[in-house]
Image (tube, rainbow, N blue to C red; front, side, top):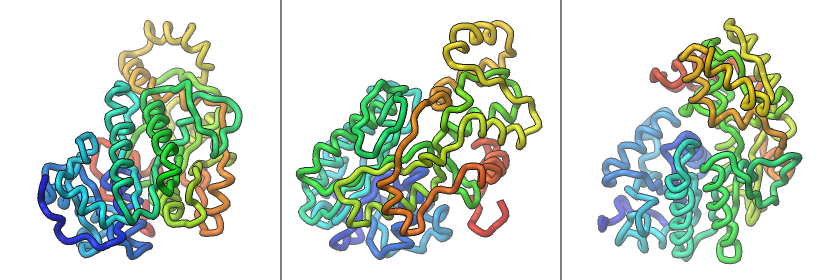
Length: 383
């Protein structure tokens, strides 16, 4: 690509990746509504016109009006898997104008190969860091990681823990590898790392653009056709609403005292247990709820019985949920003291899941668990 930057990007702009994704679109809205920064969004597209169209749709969904911030947003066609991010001759001029970077683009699929996960999560991050080093006026590089870089652990994971396996899936491993690349640049760049846990819908409206992890088994619970699930009743399920995550990413990227640190954006000691979630699901849905069986017993005995006797629909649902079940048998909690110390004085705290569970389910059922488009509900409108 050799097109000029149009319109021209003002000095000190914030460069954002992942702006059209579930969390990224909320982060974009926070910077547009709560700061006066000009935003440059790198968007995977054939050209800038296509990138701008995608971004306008995102802004209309998240902010209510597609043209509300036309003078403060520049969409740039890009490809994180390509040399120089696919920017070509625009690499250097753009680097000259960028004052901060929030890198949130990622592949979040659990069921792809490690090579596929690494292509975006590791190599894409490596290219973003190369770009950051080329920015002479860069103030901060904020990386949106995940709490699950800690891997399959027990006990308490603290925010300064570097993490490191064993990992439950390629997503966790690739995000850990990417985070290590970012952390290794702390002598060169002013870096902030933000680690969310399981992200669900907006706690005020229930809106979500991603029906995975927690939603997948709850959809099966609603159907009432899964007789048993491998889980631990007391296992904490660390869930945070997308509005809290976006508020936190914006605040931590801007807070001077967050420079050079890593933060857990999690429910922490307020996380609901598997048993509590099953109880809430039981109260919500009239269908029979599945029995909770320890994973070892399930895989040693019950899985074989289910395979022989369960209806084909139940077997298919169990198979499709297999990648999520490990998150319902965990024996770890994530300490978030450092994040709370910065976020709480700013009025940013995660709502307990039980206070908005029904709103999540209202939206999920209205959207048929992602199979039917439902217009985003604005705050203050009935869910």
